[in-house]
Length: 191
Image (cartoon, rainbow, N blue to C red; front, side, top):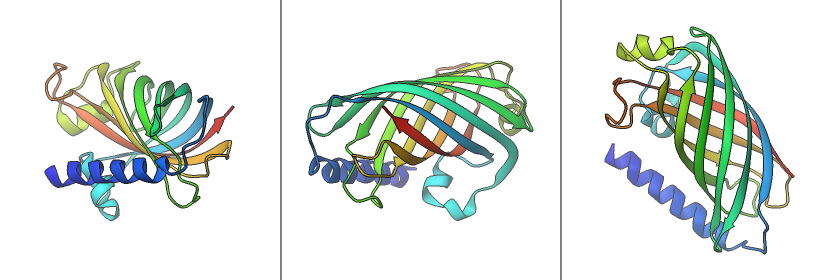
C-alpha cells in the first residue's frame, strides 16, 4: 500500500508542476457533470495500480454532479461538489456524496490529465447490499473520497474524466468495517 500512496503523491506532484507552467488569471468555474460507473470487487488500490486485474461486479451507477471551484494560489483549485447517484444491478439505492477537493491546473496538452482528490461524506438511501456482500456489514453514512484524472485543455468547457469513487469506514471512524469502489467515466461542463 505504501507504494500506491507514493505513486499517488508522485502523480499529484507531476500534475501540479505541469499545470503551474500554464497558470493564468482564472476566476474559477461552476460546473455540472454526468458520469457512468461500475462497481469493483477489489480494494481501492487495484484500479490504480493494476487496472487489468479489476474484478467487475454486476452493479452500476449513474451520477449527476454540480459544483464550484476557486483558484488556489498559482498551482490549482479548491472546490466543492454534490453528487447524486442512482445505483442499479446488484444493489438498488440512491447515494448522495459531498466532497471538498483539490485539483491541479490543467496542462495545455489534451493528453496530459489534471489530477483531483476529494474527501467528504456519502449517504446511501438504503444500506448498500454490495458492501454487505463484500465485507459482511455496512451502513448508510460513510466517508467518501475520490481520485480523478480530467482530460482536456484549460480553455475547453467540456472535459472528459475518469474517477475512482470510494466509500469506506475511514479506518474505523464509522462503526461498520466496510467499503466499496466504483470506476466512473464522465463528462464535465464548466460555465
